[in-house]
Length: 139
Ligand SMILES: [Zn+2]
Image (tube, rainbow, N blue to C red; front, side, top):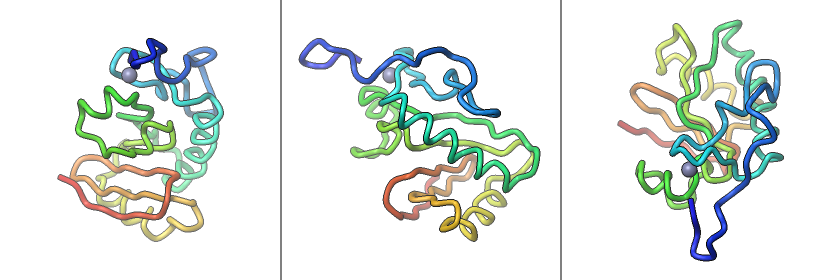
């Protein structure tokens, strides 16, 4: 996303392969086509945090639909003005084989130990982020 200064937003990942055992830079980059991250450091921290969340659901794959969003993409999809997605600190996801409602019940109970800040409960996905503690329900 070009900014007024002409500089693109964020940074490119060092590669598209694994960050941790189960998460890759390919999954983490903005999907508007810009392929960028807020920062490599924030993305790596989020991946390690996701690994711990993942263990709550056994060996089931965690399927991510949105991780980083550049400001342009965030606006286009109707994201919050200060969305943690624009810091590479938020993830929308599903756990393969589990209804989102079951994922959300589990995460609500474990949110403090998992250090989940924002927990968004949507009908067909779950949002988690590393920002301040907030809860909301979406369509
Ligand atoms: Zn983008």
